[in-house]
Structures are given as structure tokens and as C-alpha cells.
Length: 378
Image (cartoon, rainbow, N blue to C red; front, side, top):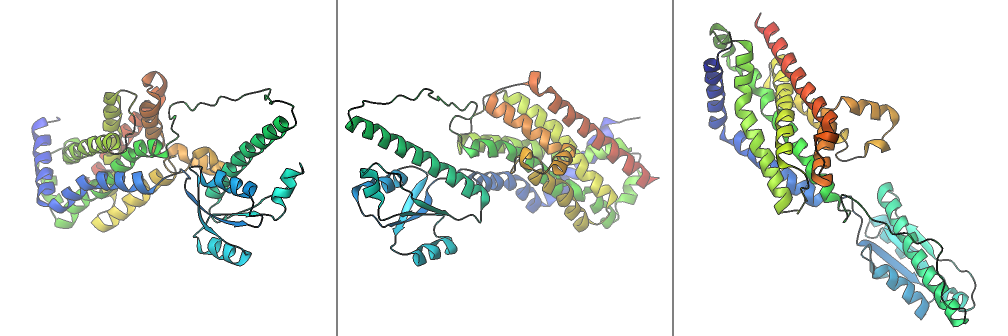
């Protein structure tokens, strides 16, 4: 028969282990802050202040005006001017510049004569995503510049202004500033909990086997559910504290808006945390060596959460076979739920399926941990 008293005794024993190993406890509390700071500041999907070099062969007011359009935008920063391709190529090869603009000699004469002209743009394509964004920004600025020249030409010819037949009024919903930080920070909560499970619970049972204390536990009246829940309880409390730290830093340091219900985030995080801890303790049950258990936990939980959950890379951009693989990564559903609550302010009326799948996964992990430990003890 299930006994809360025996469960509390196991939880107290595990808590003493945690408190004695103060380095692991400090690391468990410091990891959320480190991840928030590292990912919040270092990982950015925004492209701005792109280092740009220019070779202005025309050296006319018109060419300088074109360059000023680039340098005056928030996307480009002109770092140097050159008069040959050798120096431009050296800048691109060394990574000191991402974009190079070459204005031809007859640029100004062609504009004044009303003829078409061209400007050469060289982009470092070693980072395909950055290069694609840079080319998009250049094309947008070129369109604005061309439109202004057309209006001035018509005005000078006495034709008056020109009104486009269709005017776009774009507006970004849910993340109007288009800040990548607003998308990244909510996902860090899932990564934090996976790390806690990988580093802490993956060694709980393995430590008992290595120290020879598992035989003593087996000889006591403690039952399998009491042993599993008792060992998870201290780490669950640590994980909840880590979630609170991550949420607080996201709002206070990075000003990430929280438009939804914080209680829904905490409740879903608690369920996801149970699943992550149960997955970690299952690995600890199967693998009796602490070092191997930690490595296996990182490989099977942390890496899929980082790469296949949509945290860093958009799932629709992945190959079709990999997209199917992401359906078995629980962090995918939790990150979708977090971003929906954080950025869109929606609740379970829309995100119920994500919450249900997280709950099913947590129950499944508890069942597997119970089954594996029971087989080990028999």
C-alpha cells in the first residue's frame, strides 16, 4: 500500500544528497541564468549593422547619396572605402565585411541622362541565412531609392507625382518589433528543464548502485512508486525555482512580453518537468554508471530539445524526414505552448492538444520508470 510517510523519507534522503553536493545544487540554480544570458545576448536571428565596404568609382553626389542610403539604415554600416577588388576580396575572405558595393564610373551620367545603370553587390555567402537576409535588405533599399528617383524625374519633367495603385500597410502581429529575443527566451525554459533532468536525475539511481546503497533500499519496505516519486521531489522543487528564475530574467533583463496567463506557464512547466525528471531517472535506472548515465541523458534529451524542437531552427525548413522525427520530441509541443502564451496571449482553448501531449508524455515516462525499476529489483 502506498505510504506518504515512506515517500517523505525517501525525499528527505535525496534532499540530503542534494544539500551535501552543494556544487551540483549551485550549478542547478546557476544554469538558468547562464543559459538566459548566453542565448539572450549571443543567439540572435536578427541581422543589423552588417559590415559593408564600398568602392565608389563614380565619386559623384549621386553615388554618395546611394551609399548614404545604405549607411543610414539600421541594417548596414560602411566600415571602409577602397579603390580596387583586391582589398574588397581580402575584406570578404577575412570576414571583416559581409557586403561589398561597387558603384561604376558612369553611374551618375546614366542617371542624369535617364538611362538604366547597375551597381554591383557582393555578399559573403558562407552563412546562407545571413546572406539571404542581407540581399533582401539591399533589394528593399534599392527599390526605395529607385522609387524616389522616379518621382524626382517625373517632377522635373512637369508630370507631377506618381501614386502606386496598391499601397501595402504591413503589420507584424504578436511580435511587432520582430525581435528574435522574444522568440528565443520562452524556449529557454524548456531547455533549462531538460538540462536539470539530464544533469541531476540521471545519476540518482546510478549513484545508489555505485555506492552500494541500493541493496539497503531494497531491503526496506519502500515501494517502487514511493522510491521514484521520493527521488524526484527535491529536483522538482529545484526545477520549479529554475523556471521562475528564467521567467523573471526574461522579463526584467530582456523585456520579453508575457501576454498570457503566468499560471498556465507554471502549470504546464510543472507537467513537463515531471516528464523530464522521469526520463532522466529512467536513464539512471537502466545505466548503473553515473558518468555514462549523464552522457546518455544529454544525448537523448538535451540535443533533441536543442535541435529538433523548433527552438533554434524552424521545423518547416527542415527536410521532410526530419520533420516527422520532431513529432516524438516532447520539447516541440512545450515550446509551441510557451510561445503561444508568451507572444499571442492564448490559452488552453487553442493549446489544449499541446498540453495533452505533454501530460501523456509525463505519465508515460513515469510508467516506464516504474516498470524499469520494478524489473531491476525483481
